[in-house]
Image (tube, rainbow, N blue to C red; front, side):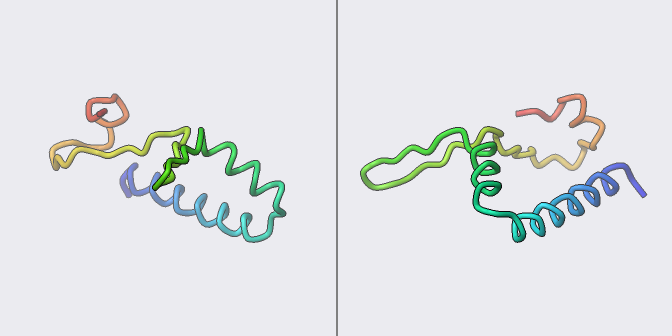
Length: 77
């Protein structure tokens, strides 16, 4: 099994545990999680923009890159 497959499996496991925990947690815990993830909320006249603390990673479409390249930031934005 490749390193990437193992990492993806662990991320899926973590995601499932977080999902289950959020279903069980109280309002205060959920509010703390939202505060940890969201940097600010910008409210305009016609729209609302949520700015997260962590930028989403958009990998370039390049079949020649592998996980090791990304770890060394070769495929960074």
